[in-house]
Image 1 (spheres, rainbow, N blue to C red):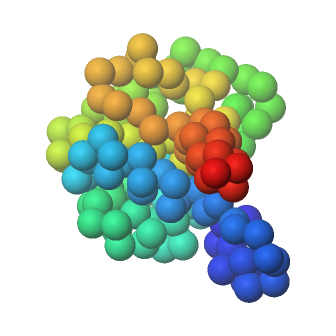
Image 2: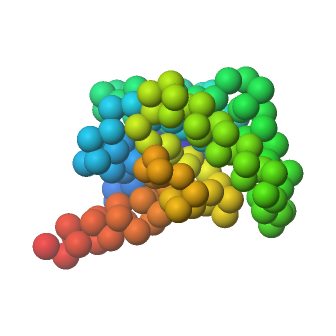
Length: 148
């Protein structure tokens, strides 16, 4: 839905909290210069999300084509159905390790369901769960700003 955020914003009078903007803010706050992005194929391959991060001065790495398929299939064929498997967790951690070896200083969990599979205590690289960032930090900050 965030792909059409600019069109929505043009037609409403309240601010729209774009998930990629608030994620970029969080990455900058943590001084991340290069980040891996995991999500659906659509999120990893399309520019609507990546470009906002890139335009914030942060390089974005995505898994190779085979790994993108693994991530995408796990999201839709397992996590969306409530299936959390050890083999998928192992695959995700292997993909994360490869991206860290390519220089990723953090990993964006760019799909709501990925947090069901991978948590911070599974890896030493910082994880940025966009659902949590978007819902807790950005929304709360917006409310506090409105009150002040």
